[in-house]
View 1 (tube, rainbow, N blue to C red):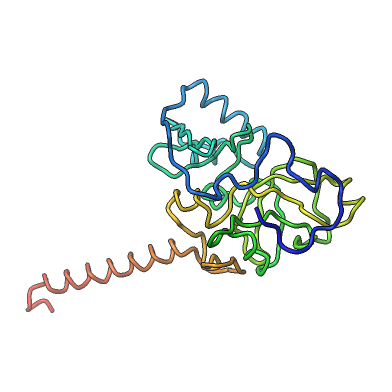
View 2: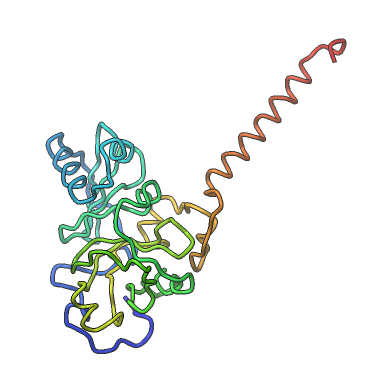
Length: 257
């Protein structure tokens, strides 16, 4: 993927992806090559590993995401594997190198299930795929460091990215630097390898939905408003109530009006 800005000299771990990894596996179109259902033992193993890796993912939350019954396994032409509950959108994906990540659909249901990096709205333009660009990895100069710091930072750690003022993640990936790297070279160079991002082919495959009105066509901005889906549902409910009231009024005898 393309990077934005100049890339200064930095430790090797921060300069290039580690062996057995690849930035955004969904940067291009993909096809589902095989489909199958996970056995009960495999589902139990998947659930156990997810809860161990993401402590915020409670059993109840996982039941709501993966369901309690069948989980589909979709092998894709790009080497990835999608884990799909019933007829719903993909909930998790394997990047083809053994790393299992939540999809944006899942993160929008549980935004705080993993550590995050926060960036400025204009930076999101570089992260999102567009035209022939696959979208950039996350550069450290674009990361907003809170007063309490970035928390425990480890090489290979899975994190999501969100825009300041918008609690919904826009991407998920893994860290290319550790706390020691940052301390040694400062906030310079590439920090996170993006695996899945808003507007990529997995987002499109999952229905092209957005979690709130801050998710625009070319960037993501701050938003405190209700999710578009919720607003649309509320509007539809109001319209339905009005239609029912009109029908009841028409059905009443003239003398009773």
